[in-house]
Length: 322
Image (cartoon, rainbow, N blue to C red; front, top):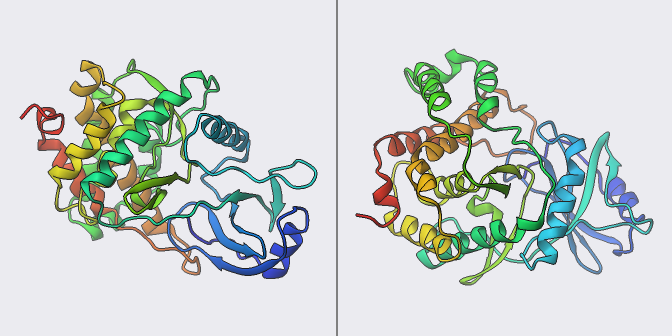
């Protein structure tokens, strides 16, 4: 979440007038995240999230997101719903962007998760993978391995080396290795691929919501677990790996979904890919984020450090075979 596109209170109220949700009481831009423009709206009846879709979300994909969340909600997953206006429309035009009003889920995101919370996240991810068994719509991963070289080519390599000496050459070598090692026949389904702590809401120790599905797609379920592992099992700067959180996260997932041996064997390849995906998108944003955007830029090197960990880790260490 972030704010790139400015929306006035008057424009927001004109949008709300199409809905049966009450009058606008307060409006606040949300700086966290890096993808879409988001506002927290409070009316005299409830709270909502107003999202305007920026460059990384193709408007043609929005019906897929809508249908996925509707499917998950019906299956009992704690996910937000798109709100329909009086005419039954959930997709709007606002400030020259596509926009949606989305259900607000209460809860807080944790910055230093406890093992019990990590286990709950692993279980929730596994339940989601089970719940989408009957969801037959397909959507390619637009930020999958086939996109990484082109994204790297759009980054100024001298700027990468200013962040860390030799970073550009290291990324280039890793991309070559990943292309050679990447699997093509693991179990796949609709996946989140962005389940960071700030996209999970807790009420105490109880998981209350999974949010921000705009990188969801059809991909390997083990890759989704690898992304979540990279997101949850390290200090924020990527320098410290937390074995207890890793054990809890993978344990919670494995309690519900037992990965195949091929998925476990290739998990570190997928984890290196997950690290590369976020290293590259963060690097691109670090270099190209507009100076007037209300957004917190995120350090690309935090995922370079994760990548270095996964290069030397052993799958047995991660899957309780120590």
